[in-house]
Length: 427
Image (tube, rainbow, N blue to C red; front, top):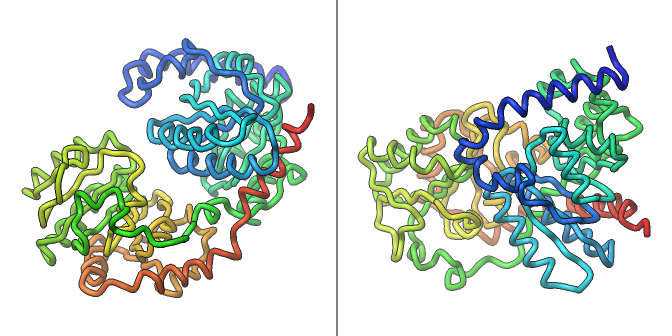
């Protein structure tokens, strides 16, 4: 059964599921934060554009897009929402930058409302956007159906679609096509083909990946200007384990053990992908009899052989600039990987695990040049990190190689901003 009646029934069932889940969500440690905004007890502001960024990675892309949009549209108001505290911090930083510039531009930030259809309909009534932007693989049924019902165009930017996700969505292809975005800007021909199967080829086009726009090499961040200089001595044997996911924690334990066994004086900066894992890591390291501290408790230089559990947002880039070696997580188990371009931009060649299909768009050129090393086991990861500590690469040479690779692949934010501007320039 398809058509308006089927859509209404599916919407009602989806909404009922949310209603039943609300008591649990109220007690959820992460989702209870910003609960008043998520349930619209605290109303959302009116804005011409609504950008939804699921978490930190999407929030960085939203900030990039808004900077490009400022060059396309002289005056606009935008609301940027997110599902996580990390995402909100990043969006607030973007708001401080945008709102401090020319008059006539205003960015509001908030936690995203829960995707209950009735809640999203109310949110759209409050915001009254001319367009809604979703990023990467975000397809929120409540928001999409409410936009369709209200006639608000939706643009999927930096769109990607994994085969497993596509298979699931195709089971409800009629619904997805009916409520899908008006435009889907895909990051590759393969993603465009998958999104076209779901929404119709006429809605899909290919754009440069905005993640390349975020790779700004610029000048090396001098030690004296690095905000972490107070806790890490110059030239310290510092290793970053970035964006570590919950599912790979037992494997990362083995990486840490191997590192400290080979180089006992190493200082390890551990950045969990989700901040709530800090407590678990404290327990793990205590059990392993490894000295640890939290970033927030530090007032002076770290002692050799210490693992620093990073409980502060926004310092991963600064840490990469001080690191002599780095591992990027989400890659030791089949989670698709995390952004390994960030350490490259800071001048450190990262190690990743074998699972990095979320970043297949980068290509294999960086691996072919040895700028990114792929290790299959935790012991292999530790071995490469130790080798990098023993013989660090010249940062300037590495950064020049990365710039050559990236420079021809930029322009995604400008491309997407031009497509979005047509919805805002309607007055």
